[in-house]
Length: 321
Image 1 (cartoon, rainbow, N blue to C red):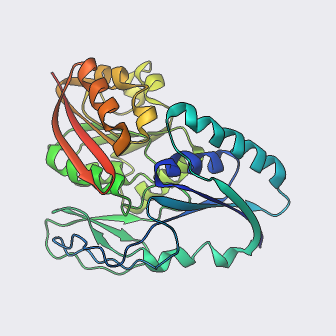
Image 2: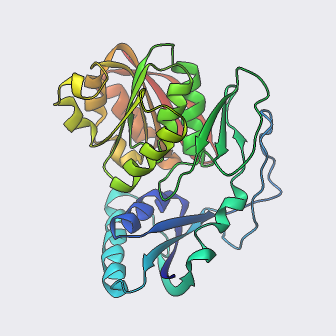
């Protein structure tokens, strides 16, 4: 099958927003390439193995490619995406050049080639992410394996925002906790929380592609009875009866790995969703938005108990007073 590949050269800061624009425009898949410094020292304290192909992308920049079925009105898609990229400046997001190129590619050129670089990855003391197509033997009984096939949804654990969330979850989750995962993507955080001892996780996403992916990954891990995946946002969930969601509101932990601009929109909703003393893990925050998110959390009544950083990304662990 032939697909139309739309490639956008942008900044790392704008990656998640532009990726979302392509999905909403009907992309059948999206790939992301970022700057690679193969001489950069990498954290291998947990046995991580890094196999990253070199590229010509400048530091701080990224290349995003969206794939559309042959016959798609590509001119219309490009016009729509360009318009939405132009709006990012109003959110103080620098999209860089945002140059767009189009070409025809065969399905085999993109659908499976990326898999050769996605290897089992130990992201914390207890959590290892294992692609479904890779063989891996746990080193101990304490090591928990997250089986994952991300498909077209965001969340493989290799991006700093996801690994930050998983590591901070490990320090927060207690046996029997009920958890809400906002913007679940591939479902990786919901699965991680369940593996760490959560009794039930409510995984939310507004993207039907993500919902489908999260449902499949939940099934792959045998956690259908402990993870409920719902196409929704947090505010809509707060208005529903808890019995429909398989968690009792308020919960002890909320985790959100989404853009800072979105995090800022529902800080008060998260506060409402949490028990007194409960924890909010907020990730997906680029360094230039750290102060704004911190101020919003404090203004809502949270106290920040931990600030974790990896590369240019930040995650907060905030406790409801």
